[in-house]
Length: 178
Image (tube, rainbow, N blue to C red; front, side):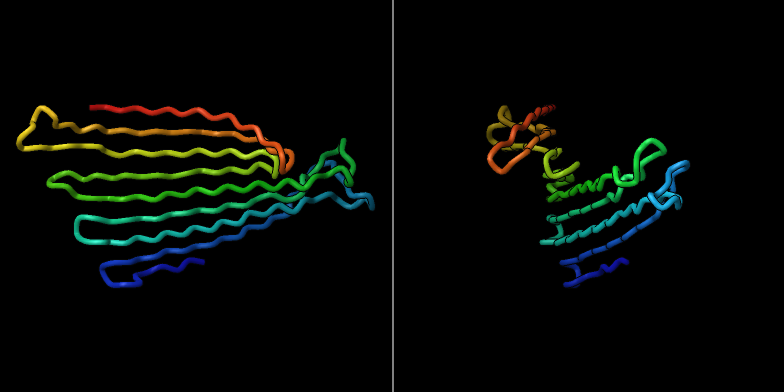
């Protein structure tokens, strides 16, 4: 289902949606212990939310988040016993905060976001992203004027087998253009 609309006329809007999907997947040549055909239950849940705030005609703020959880029992195959199946969930979250502004005849968008993917409770994958424009204009010191478009991304993978130990590897890439 979906729900959205304005909360405050010309100022604040919201949107929310949720979706659930379930299916039984039957595997060829795979059987339960009682001889009946083997089928696994698979599921997916999606939740999306967005909030937009128009502070004034030149400034707008946007918040967004999407959550996904999916999984179920692995179906197994003709070489795996029915009891050898595994529960296999994954979940991911994507989010951002954005500021949009109009400066003179320029449109500027500054964003900060993250993508978090949990394969299971021990492994986590995260990725963040930023982009925008940094600028300075002066009537008196024109040699110090600049406009720099930039973006930055940083993926990170972590392994945490217990509450007292975690190891992470990350890489940050950024690019700036004057």
